[in-house]
Image (cartoon, rainbow, N blue to C red; front, side, top):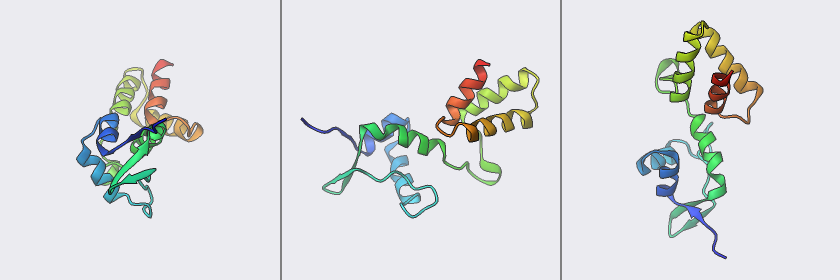
Length: 122
């Protein structure tokens, strides 16, 4: 049986980014950085490959990227949607942000997008 791996292009397509973004992540976040990009499982003729089963790990890695510039950058799309709805429901931005952050700390297995989706259902 043949094992299946994702190359840079496969990872990029699965994460909804360009292959250039994956190359930049690998160079900006090496194994010795505070937020290292997941190391490939195989390398063939210099080309990296990641096991398909590790896609969730890469999604969580991407969701944990710091924002750009001072103040953490622009919120993710999930957080923006959640904040808009939370403000419409009467929460202040600080209250809504604290709620997402606290939920994320209490349930580390959930991505930020999953936390926001859960809170929107309530």
